[in-house]
Length: 55
Image 1 (tube, rainbow, N blue to C red):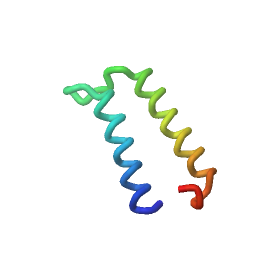
Image 2: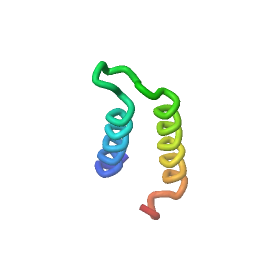
Image 3: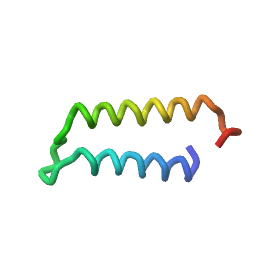
């Protein structure tokens, strides 16, 4: 993973965590969090399949 890809992954993870973790540090919408996580992983996988020349 390049530095840019690392930064993008951290940004996505941070957004997911902030959107679905409450002030008590518990997931407040588990189904929505899981769906968002699965979507992000699918997008990352698809982006990886495109190959480095398309980035």
